[in-house]
Image (cartoon, rainbow, N blue to C red):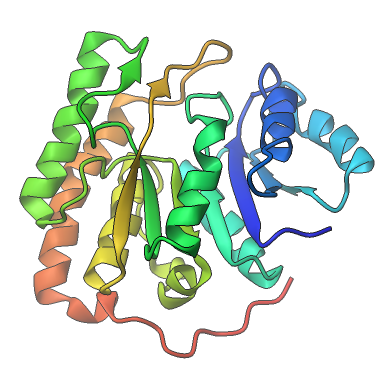
Length: 256
């Protein structure tokens, strides 16, 4: 039976994790979640593994296959559009590598379903620094990046760069997804800031983030610097280009 909630997991070379992360999401007992994998033509065969799992549970597991690496942001945008076309009310971003705690999925969904949030963020920094097995340099970079975002944007979100996020359907319908600019690290900031400027309520749910054990991180310096300058551009747009942050009242009807 189809759920009202969809977990979108972008993948590129995640064969070590993909079967286990899908099964973990499907086995959450507090609420049923369906899964959409957005795979960027992983040469390690990630997509093929997903295909075999779809054959076993076609109602709950889905895949979008893309021609190659096109960036995290574009993967999520593709997933968001698919989710809207297919009638999901709660759409969740999640990594494939178990860095985001599967057991917190129902809390994110509940924050949007019954907790009054339009956007729920799985926050590493709401109650201190809750990150395990990250090098000190990366942890400091991430923590101060979120502080920098708060300073520049005025958005009171402790973990602005978080990638474990639940959106109500109405938020994604209100945002012009085709106008989202950033593809990497800054994508997460842009989505939250756009929702914030549109007046949507953002709440944070504390999580413990655990660095991946299997597979390879996709983080690099260019992604970081995109976020550094991107935050300034977003703030300037909120002052001089306010029409960018006006909610769409009658978004175009999406089709599969």
